[in-house]
Length: 61
Length: 140
Image 1: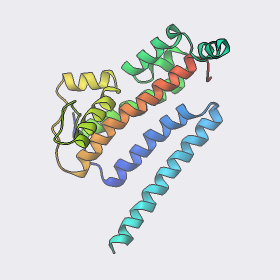
Image 2 (image 1 turned 90 degrees about the vertical axis):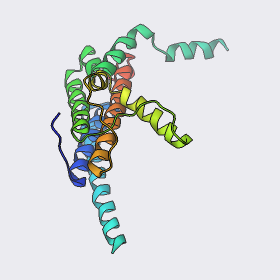
Image 3 (image 1 turned 90 degrees about the horizontal axis):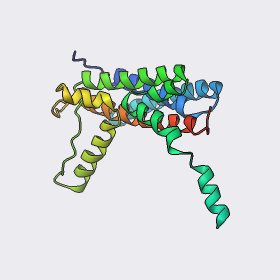
Image 4 (image 1 turned 180 degrees about the vertical axis):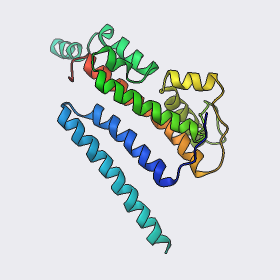
């Protein structure tokens, strides 16, 4: 198995992508709702990623 | 009383309707959806769970083993993590069989790997629940 070392951002980005795809598919009943919910989840993940990242940076000074 | 029993019976679909898709979905992520003729969704679920699992292995993630820890929290984490790893189905079995289970190491990348492996199993549980709902006719 090839070893890879991802940065925090890359790992969190991939995590967000895969989880959003599955949550979009499994949570809603129509195709449109699934696509919208998938993008919504992904947007929320990224928002949290950048938001918490900046909060930690500013918190540490 | 009779109407309550009838409602409960109606709410629970027969086991033979959903057991095979759910079981197939556990062994191979997305297989339940393929069996229910939802190939597009099945392919996306398969790709997402498989990639998550492979990234977890590539980042040297650790597989949990069901063992007692020095305290209750560690025991809970070990058993819970093992259940989640096991939910990934055949991928977990093959990874352990071929010796890809790696020792716990310090470092952010390894920690992410462990979380990826656990999350792959959790996502497969979501996929299995979705297959159940489709098989039971609760969802298209």
